[in-house]
Length: 249
Ligand code: PEP
Image (cartoon, rainbow, N blue to C red; front, side):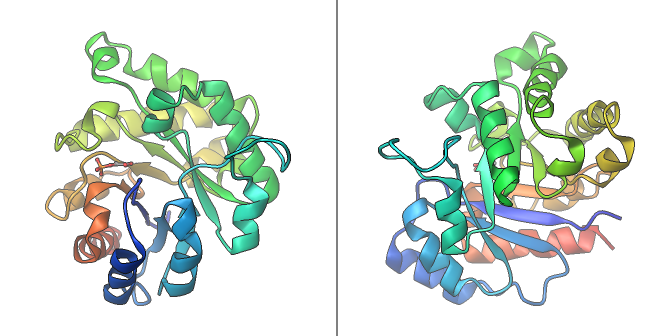
């Protein structure tokens, strides 16, 4: 049985005051699922210090070792702070910052090499889905990662299926659509290593809310969620975490 994992992605949101209020309200110590909060870099120390019942993640990391890369953040620095996780290849990084499948794979490999747990994001755009290319796009994203990391290494982290058309849009993929893609992701990984594929946690992300989390998290290949907008409210995030625990029963 794979333990459920729910990760918040605060994206480029927050302030010291708003984060303090969130951390005062959220308490995950009694939850029977794993919780990660991915905060903007500058707020990681505040979250690491104040988070009760969970681990902290970054939303990105550099593919490079420390050195002359102005404005970048190395995985070593994240670990030095006490950050344990990093989102890799979020669709906003792919779309707005031109991160290719290969760059994302290099980031995932670098995170794993350092002992930082990657949440590797994959997903298709609406145009790609409508053109019947969902699986081909995801296969290419996964294959780039598998060229540099084994499925066993990925077990340290998770893979998140985030259809681009469902992120921040209020349009959630249907449970059947999500299950179909998750099963295909697991099958792809199983071609390399069946045992690792069976254990790897596959998260769904895209407009997950307290009201729709249960039907998503009870799909057989859905092991939790990556939560954007709804994670900004501690109460909603807590409700989604509770739903993940309930779905595992
Ligand atoms: C995300 O940012 O990864 C995400 C899934 O966002 P939202 O939940 O707002 O769709």
